[in-house]
Length: 278
Image (cartoon, rainbow, N blue to C red):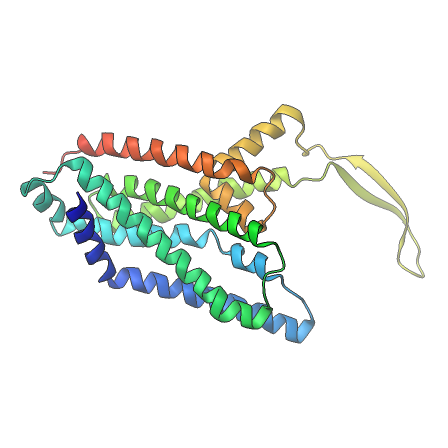
């Protein structure tokens, strides 16, 4: 299995798809830092480096969807999977090797992102203002959730024999997860009370009387706990909380990610062993 992983990683590092995606991550993040700096110079809008450094967390999932779909999907298109089976490799070894390749792809995208932070973000926006412990923990949580995305996309692509279909399904899956997680985030962000201004001073245009009314969309009690657990369990939900640097339970994220990684990998191996590769 070690030789199989080494061979797959060697092919991955020679893949133009990988380096184009990694370069795209670097370019997009660099432009984001420049845009923040430009806003600071023109309008005085000061941007915190830490928030900008983690705000693009969901982009790693999209980059992985493209890399996994094109690279792993090519294993079927070029007959590489059949050749591996012919020479005696077991299906579980082939699947775990594909997972290792996907995880390495995600980690390279993360490295590219933080390279842009070091080379462009810090010179333009300054150093991190939050504690190194906080930055290190959120970075660790980000790496964990990237591994979960790699496992999910590996399962999807290894069960799909078409490169194009794998890429399209992967992107649609990520966008769907973004929509659901964003909806959950919006519900959890609803204020407990709505503010209504009943009287306004016509000279100063300031409210003279403010009335608070209960917000019917505010989640309470058990329902709020359920939504929060859903937000923490979903990988994209973790990404959104990491990008906002406002997670309520960041200590549970790596544990959830580890459990999901094991469950998704186990399901993927079980399904791949029963897949018809003829």
